[in-house]
Length: 163
Image (cartoon, rainbow, N blue to C red; front, side, top):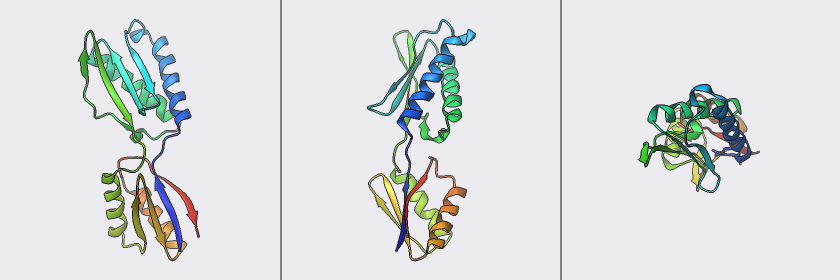
């Protein structure tokens, strides 16, 4: 039986390069030159902390970060900007999570998209990835085509294709 896995990963080195490049741009931008705070990557928790004096500058930091991440080849949907800004002392802080793994909500969307397309495959959730299997490779390729056209809300990679 042919199969492949659906995963959602961000290369940690590429992410670190994007954050470092964004930090360098922050130091050279005239409008943000004297900004207190900045951006910090926490590799352990897979988060990025943005901090500045006001929410307008935090939004500018978000824009710089997103631009650098896209230029490094990382899909912008890999970042979760939904966290609210928090005032702590004189700084406004915002925590951005880097999505890793296919979560349950995305798994439901993937399963629904494949079933709606009536592709003859089986989909199974396995921890933070999904296994898609079928009798024919053509059915697997049809499932991949359906998922590439569907907006799941996070970047997907298709790995471990076995025939």
